Image (tube, rainbow, N blue to C red; front, top):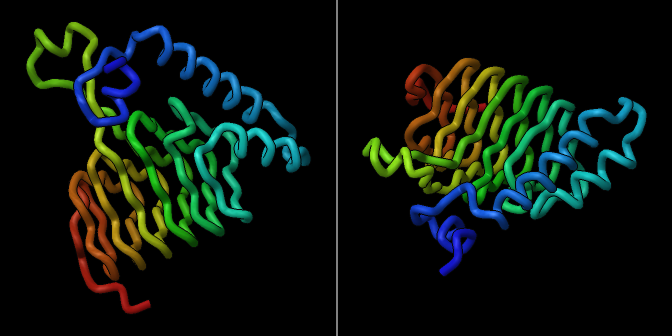
Amino acid sequence: MNEKEKMLQGLLYDASDKTLLEERIKSKTLCQKYNNLLPTENEKKQKILKELLGKTGKTFLIEPSFYCDYGYNIELGENFYSNHNLVILDVAKVTFGDNVFIGPNCGFYTPEHPLDAETRNKGLEYAKPINVGNNVWFGGNVTVLSGVSIGDNVVIGAGSVVTKNIPANVIAFGNPCRVIRENKG
């Protein structure tokens, strides 16, 4: 099994693998091109994102700046919007449902590093996917960590660090993020 196959299966893998390095360079080059486009160059923006991302809906917008590791592990549902400074470390799959809105300075991080220093110092890591349901709103400066699933109709308050799954139909916030009340809206 090669390093990319290990990565995609959530196993320990070597992130310095030549193929993975080349794929990250390609992704980061496309992100750089995207981030340097003028605000009026919408067709070029859409073309780059469609080349970069694994799946998009017909209607989506990511305000620059945007950064990701691979791009092909990111799936956007219909009517997706992200404000400035979105970072998605997509070592594992990151899936967003329909009608997802993300405030500025948010990050979705799938990689994890071994707690054992000897293993970690070898440059090995692994990743767990992130899944976001439909009709979800993230306030600004939210961080979502690996292995988290967020249900439908959820609001995540600004500044939250989401370390565990969040069920559907709730408002949650904090560090660590926790359910505060039902979302009846």
